Structure formats: structure tokens, C-alpha cells
Amino acid sequence: MRCVCPTAALRRQTPCMLSEQFLKLLKSMTSCSVVPKPPVRRVAIFGGTHGNELSGIFLVKYWQENGAEIQRAGMEVKPFITNPRAVEKCTRYIDCDLNRVFDPDNLGQTVVEDIPYEVRRAQEINHIFGPKGSDDAYDLIFDLHNTTANMGGTLILENSRDDFTIQMCHYIKNALAPERVPVLLIEHPNLKYATTRSVAKHPVGVEVGPQSQGVVRADILDKMRKIVKHGLDFVHLFNEGKEFPPCTIEVYKITEKVDYPRNKNDEVIAIIHPNLQDQDWQPLNNGDPLFLTLDGEVIAYKGDCTAYPTFINEAAYYEKKQAFVKTIKMELTAGHIRSSAVGQNTS
Image (cartoon, rainbow, N blue to C red; front, side):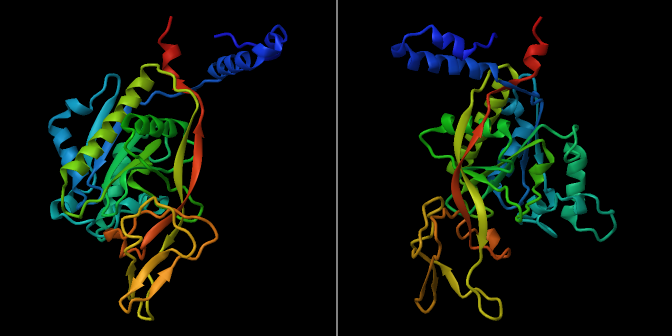
């Protein structure tokens, strides 16, 4: 497509026509700046990274036997149980958290007899779907999780500069509207997660709750299923040549993990205040109640700016000394993208 010079074109217009014409020219210029992206041909759907988060486990096991629902033309979609021993025991993990060991030290650790099971499993997963950071790694991984917190159907991003995953989130949010689909950005200079999905070029976490550990709820499973469906639809449209113009999404960027108040013996001495319980993604302002001691003392939030807490009272995070995660609200913008394979297929 030929790009139009805006200055020459505008000189030929009367002043009353400038505004409308300028917008048309901007649109034309934007279409010229489309950024070709490699097609997404290999996709994995992980369930059971935590063995007691049952929605993803149920879905992945079903799709392993009945895969038509997740298959799309032009790409391979592989459902995969990541932590089978933890799934068998219906526990979060066997030796350590699988979703925290995909870092260079653990992936490069020598395999010995007493190596933690999840570290050995991480190396196996990296071999199948990676190597992490290489051209041979899978293009996209959806990692399916449940939370006991009232987070709804949340998408988790790891890279604020990944236009493809930002565009995917935009597509999923629009497809599920008016239902809310929060996006959590876990990119942080000091908080490193080393997630299972980080093996892929484009990692996407799907966190749906509230759902108790070791329990599966039909409404939560259905919400997760729809998110995956629309994500796969997006990939299919992208691979088929559909262009996605620039878009902007609202995200919640992690800033801090907040622990429970503790005594000198490191024991929790206050619980989540009733006003905060189940208020994931809602604004938290200076003076708002955070915790309540058993003596009835209210411990309030002290902060200069509004925060947006999430993972509030997550059962799995008591061992991690985390009562909730503080986030700030911001916007991410993705450029105009299309698959680079489209031009290669035209004569």
C-alpha cells in the first residue's frame, strides 16, 4: 500500500476540510506502519502447574482426550499436565513451587539423586517446550491457574513491550465484554517469578477465581475455558493474516507484595479486614482498613497514592508471607501488527 504525504495532500484542502481529511490521512499512514510479526504455530496449554488448582487440570485432561475444541488450522495446540505427581496427590507441589524455578540456576542445575522433583520437572519441560529464550521455544503458552482470591478471570502478562500478547489481551477483553477481564503485569525489576510459562516466546497466565484449592466449580471452569477459546481464536485470525491496529489496554502493574502483621516469633497476628476481603482490583486509599487483630485493632493502609490490591488472602501465599499484592493502574499500548507469513504466501 502506498503511503501518502500528509503535507502535500492537506495543502489542496480548504480549512473546513482539514480536520476530517487529517484523520483519514493518519489512518492511512498508520496502516503503512504495520509491524510484521512471526506467525504463532506452536501453542501449549499448561494445567496442573499447581496440583490442587483443578480447573486447568480438568480442562487439560479433557482436551488430551477430546482435542477438537482447541485445535485451529495452521497451528499445533498441545495440552500438557506440568506437575503430574502434585496433581496425583492434589497438592500445590511436591518439593518446591514449580512456578518459581524456571531461572537459569535451576534449569542449568546438574541432575543428582536428591534434586527437588519440581526442579527436575522444570528441566524436562524446558527440554520439551524450550529451551527458554531460544528460537526453538514454543511460540505461546497459556498457563492455567486458580486462585482463592476474588480476582475473576485475570490475564497475567510478563512483558510490557510484547505487542502480540497485548493485542491478544485486547481481543479477549473485547470478546468477553461486558464481563471484566483484568490484566496483571508482573514485570518488576526486583520481583522475579521465573514462571513455568516463561519458557515460551509469549507467556500468558490465566488466573481464575475465587475457587478453593482441591475443588472445581462449573462457573470458574467455564470462565477459564472461554478465555482460552478467545485466545486461540485470536492466534488463528493473526496467522490467517488479519491485521490488528494499534490498541491500548488498562493493566495493573505489580509494585509490592504485602505481608501480614507478625509478632517476634514470626506468627501472623492480624487477618484481612472485612472491608478489604474480596475487594480485588478495587481502589485502596490512605486510611482504608487493611488488617484486623483478634483484639479488634484496625490496621489501616498508609500510602500517598491509590493502590489496587489483588491476590487478597490467597490461601497458597500464606507460606510466601504475602497477604496481598499492591498494584498501580496504567495503560499499555501495542502497535499495528500482522503475521509476517502473509506476504510470503502471496504471489
